[in-house]
Image 1 (tube, each protein chain N blue to C red):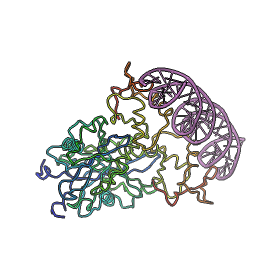
Image 2 (image 1 turned 30 degrees about the horizontal axis):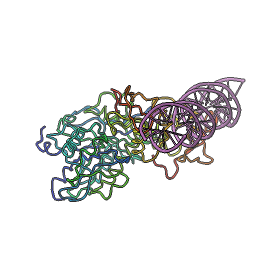
Image 3 (image 1 turned 90 degrees about the vertical axis):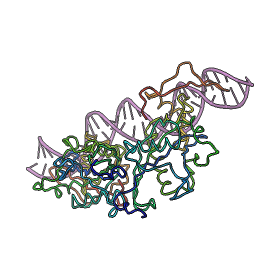
Image 4 (image 1 turned 90 degrees about the horizontal axis):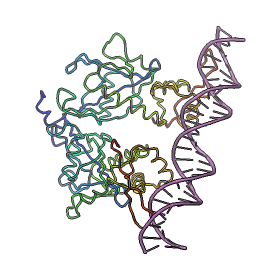
Length: 220
Length: 220
DNA sequence: AGAATAGTGTCTGTCAGACAGTATCGC
DNA sequence: GCGATACTGTCTGACAGACACTATTCT
């Protein structure tokens, strides 16, 4: 413990698993740490709570994301709080973990390959991460899967307009396993959150697919 | 903000909703606050994280409970983390909320009516609480109900040995609504967590009831 | 016998997985 | 027609609510 005030006050962080779908796989944004501790290692984007700036820990998380990625985040949700004296070598620390969802049509806008400071990694194989961030990532992914298993539709991972097949592929990416098309669509029929966009179709070398969007009052 | 260090470091608390079943209703332990802020008001037991004493925020919560109630707590679980600059008048604060379960045969051992510092209150009607603790309580109860709805058995709320009728009444108290006996027992049959205690029955003015206990590996 | 609670059997509707089938495009 | 993807229909088994039924004790 370098800092004696750590004996009185813990460090309080917000860490964010920013999730999106690329190549039909659920992916997470990783940031390479510029400074010690764990300099050079990949980690979830995170930062310290600033009481003068933030109205809540969610604000902290949104501020972190604003600094890393310059887009609006349509959805962010608290997952769990991790704590202990040894998880960060600077001293006793508290990390409030969030996951955030980013539409897949904005994924490439974020990460320019020239800047090697951030990258997208498959959540199934993120590589070695700094601190206890592998556990944090697993926790965040588990929370999202839980919600989708309970019939929530992760529309925030999709563009504004999407086909039902795209929605199904997105759910499959989140859950990491294939879903039955017939059963999937039967579930959707009961749902209120989906609105057909009249007259709009995606055309290709097949029967045209109807486009849908989230209904007005949609809350993930 | 009385303390200038609040501009740099938030206060970090663990707050605990200690839940049990009394009179066939889910109840929560409330503590009357001895000091400002909110002196004299009822609140969830809680206290500040002490980095020198606690190995995690769960340890903080257990330490708080040890000081309030002098029994072992069989189960404690993190629910959600609340934060903001105004929820505690001492300054920017973070409260990590837990719920803990106490077997109902140990409820009366805790609270002596002479000491007016703690009391059991129905979660459905806890009265006015200090800070944002009404929201915290609702959140904790919701988390427990969620888990029971997902077929977890709250055996930690029961004595070591119990009848299936007692188990059903406990679930009904948690959920706040009656359950169908036949459907409830059909669910239990599929479960691995219950072990029949051979030859032990509860007798009364009715057919004797088989006693059960939690299986060895039971995890709520 | 009757009250009281323990415990079971059965009907029915809902819903999910499985899988086969039909529809409509481009070529 | 054929390949490709969109979309639908139907069978079946699992399961939950509702509710009536039987079982065993004490008085």
